[in-house]
Image (cartoon, rainbow, N blue to C red; front, side):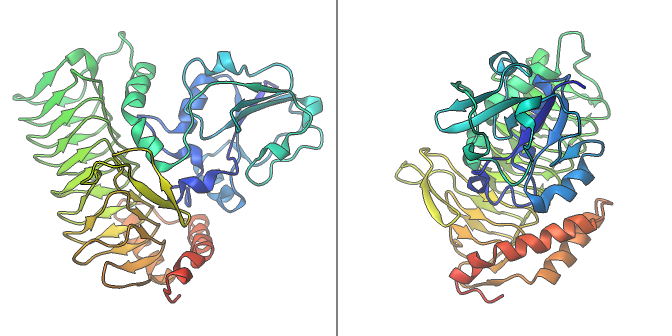
Length: 420
């Protein structure tokens, strides 16, 4: 049996709330690929096992058929555990080989990877998120490799990661311009543009890849007069609406509808921002919908560092540019305004005039005037209706996750006097 590669979550996963309530850390997107896909690309021959929090494991099995979750197969000869928060580059397998002696690889006090041989695996079980205490009497080696800690780390690295992923996925032997490209389309730096089969690029579209590559996935539609500046990624089946301006450093995952102005942002998948309005330095999770003329600020008027609330702790991001972070299944009403560094939890409905709070707990209903708890039964009803429009059913496993997350986030709402 070949050496096993286990992609794991460590004890710091909570720093990536609310984006990881419904997914493991390594299923977050940065660039074209998810963090998991980057790791798998570096170790293509490895037998992959996935580790996650207990309440997510059934959904993870559903979404990854044929891959073991939270279990090592009998007879495993050795395993390299890679932290799912690592941004893997092509040198990672040289820095941290799949095979070798037992070793812990650290970047400062961060566990990057652990390699254990068969003897080292005796008595070892995959349980809850890993900490250094899970690996005893193993030699430690310090390494330099990139990883994410907070949501804005994904956004700040996105432009460079689009470029790096483009080089992984596209080579000179491929046909670069596929699909249907209508008369009146302007392509700047054609050699830096990949358009997949089934894509439709309508008249008046400008794709400018002079400052970085542009990757257009299968069956994407770019409506007339769309402007895209690279580095940029548009995922399979997404639609970019007429007149949209998609600036550098933006990744739009599969099956999204996007209009207006978007800059240096990540839209994970199955989310809509169809109308005019500005989205900048933001991360939207899945099944998000932003109402018409929703805007977020990503720069303070005094040009100071943006502070963000994560798990009820105010964190100095160290950056002047941090926009909106919004969890899965959350929505905004028309003309909603979000301040710099606003965090909206999962399954919240935000609306009304003025700026809502910069931290909106999961399962919230309201805006700047008042916020109450968004009832779980109503949340599930809406989620099922929204997903059905994409011909996707909310599975029993996903419904169980919804209920669990509602319960574990109740303290956030209680602290803000929001009745359950």
